[in-house]
Image 1 (tube, rainbow, N blue to C red):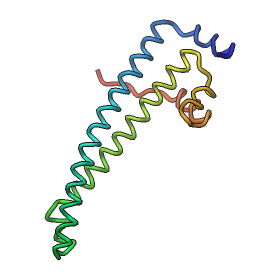
Image 2 (cartoon, helix red, strand yellow):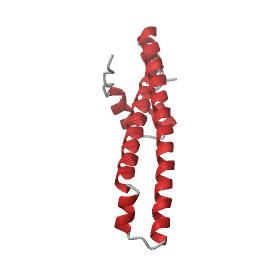
Image 3 (cartoon, rainbow, N blue to C red):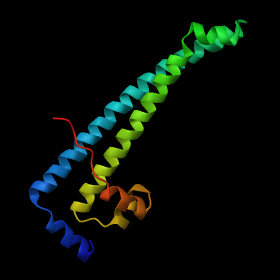
Image 4 (cartoon, rainbow, N blue to C red):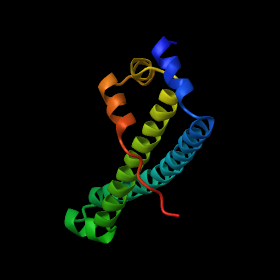
Length: 134
């Protein structure tokens, strides 16, 4: 661990470190739940697409098929869940970067571990966490 990183780690109060750890765990749980919902939605979308394919193979007009299986709603639900998982991933990553920084890791160490740029880590660590409703 670099000397200045160690100094940063000791500058963080134990209560702050505990808060950051809890936030990292909470955001990871949120991401896990979003991934489960994504998997379920993708499975549903797979079923819809299979049904569409079979109807088209049977000679049904594509527009009628899309209306019959409510393809627009399935597509929108899939897009929404993908946006949700992307937001949850971002929040979880930001929380982990902030925790790692508080524990004394350098931006370069965090970036190497995650396979991202040091600039991205720096930007995310400085990014304000959204306030949670009480």
